[in-house]
Each structure stands twice: as C-alpha cells, then as structure tokens.
Length: 49
Image (tube, rainbow, N blue to C red; front, side, top):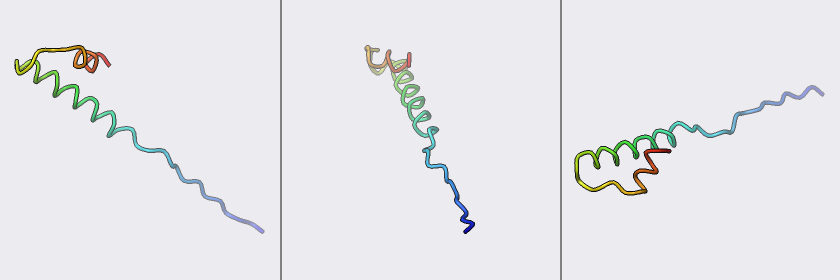
C-alpha cells in the first residue's frame, strides 16, 4: 500500500507580463520623446508604475 504522490508546480510565469508592461511603457515614452504626441496623464502614470 505504498503510493507515490507527485506534486507539480501550477503557477504561471510572470516574466511575459512584466516584460510587456516595461516594453509598452518604454515605447510610449519614446514616442513622446520623438515629439509625435504630447504627454498626458495616462502615459505619465505608466511611466511611474
């Protein structure tokens, strides 16, 4: 009656979400720096967080 129980990690990888947030913020701030559109509160908030 010896049963083997295996546990498998079910958590997701947070790296893609973090890289997406960093990349999107970087692109938006660089578009602003190129002078294509003025900075507004949404872009400023993305840059802070």
